[in-house]
Image 1: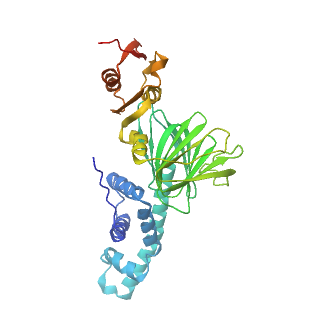
Image 2 (image 1 turned 60 degrees about the horizontal axis):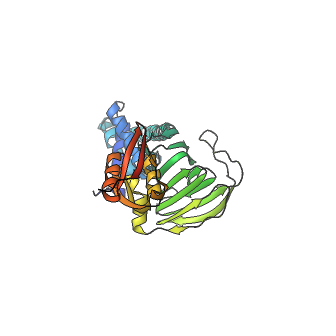
Image 3 (image 1 turned 180 degrees about the vertical axis):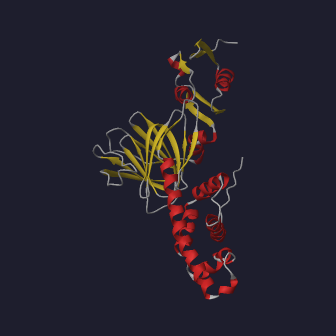
Length: 347
């Protein structure tokens, strides 16, 4: 499947921002649908909010006033000449204040609405849109805590795995905390997986800086504001690379990932699990993450058997059928929550 994403040009964004300014200045308040449309437009890209704020700040400059004051002029008697001009300028000045206040209100409301804790159940995934245009996709049985403010972008991965697509904003680095690790990005995409106290970072786009907390450090919240973290820089990880951080160890090794392996590791983002010669034990551990039914290997000799296949997440029957047909492994249901894997008898 091909996903086509369109990006508005600067001229188009400017035109849309001017249209919103005029609607905000209308005699009637925005309807519910218009309010939701404005929220969506502001959250779609940081450029939208920047352009709306920029136009509001410079509302009474000659060019912008000429373009935007027309609806106001229509409401003023054309016979009053200079008085009309003064009234238009006054109305525009009033609108500057109201629009800036409105943009600030929308921004703060959006930020506050995004803050909090998000989680998924076993076998579920969730996409989270953040107020700056960034996004998080939570994998199965995962949980994150979001803490945004006008100066801080902090995420704590409490459990599981998440893919982060970060909107560029050099003034506000995007920090993801997981166990003793901190991953910092400005504009990039990367996945972080937390397994106990170990952290795995895989970068698909751009570059991230991986650090380690050197002492107990509280995660700043939007209310508490920003303060420096005590951290030790460990590595810079770029697109197509991964790194593992082990608990209480500063020894890390950045590893290059061939495209097939990178795609396999990130297949969960598209709703699939892909295996290509991994041991059966690895496959079982991964499948168990996505299902309330636990697979267990009966014969230890099977644990190292190389297996492969592509399976849609949650389709446990397809996994069991493939193991039986291709690898001579049968499944025996012990109860509703447990399945035993053992060698199939000779045919």
